[in-house]
Length: 322
Image 1 (cartoon, one colour):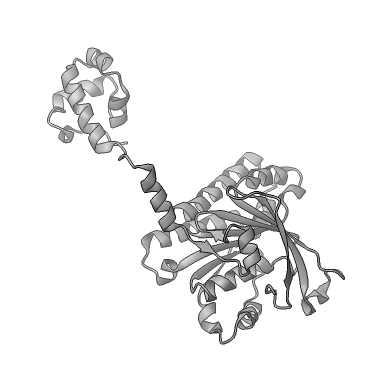
Image 2 (image 1 turned 90 degrees about the vertical axis):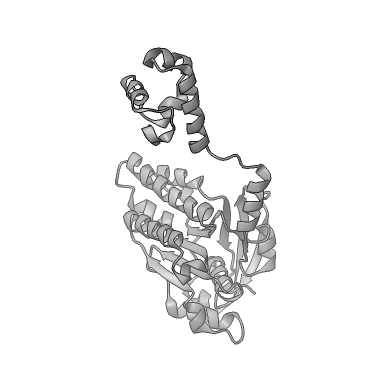
């Protein structure tokens, strides 16, 4: 908070300022939070002068009064819905993935269960004509395979143009991840990059699987501190910049020891959580890419919707919903 200065108001002369400083009142908060009767007795400054100074400070530094309807209008104007690529799942999510929220997909890491993330990215870059940042923590993103998915998604799609709308960032430890998200916040704040002005979706793949597990060897308090910094940056991206954040992780409750403590902390972070299971008959071997698979998606956490609902979807060989 600002320090008291003589130019703030006519009543705050250099003599008055010295008297206030002599009793430990050096900042705006110090003066506003004091009982003026007590402060007048301690400092020797008249109550009238202190009241005049306080009125000026409150007028300059107090937060403006905002009506609830105004805040609601701002939320409605800045919130948009990102489709996941198929109507039945959009309906389960109340329309789709909302900007301003953190949505997590918990999968069994089979080929079929990763289809939700891929379909969402394809929908954003083709149907919405918006940009995506994909944070890869396992070096698992295959550009050629993604190009094949784009080509198979719809007729006459401009694959090259669509691929330019996806930016891949590789992060293999917590410090790299924090640095990447901080840089993303700074770039979005400057708004001088055409890519970030059209950015709609941020995908983070494998935070629990790769980042949190790698921190299990350090004291749990330090690990929780890093997780808190990560959560703060994710909330900045969703609330201050109105992006949709989509996380793809393994099951956080299946770990033990220090990892379990970090994962329990992480468990409360997402606003919406979908559990995805591959229910393809005939196994999930390497040949599963050659035929259509089937997945079950259940809503296990939501601030807006009743949990427990589920849908079953089919996925083709390109990992697109059918």
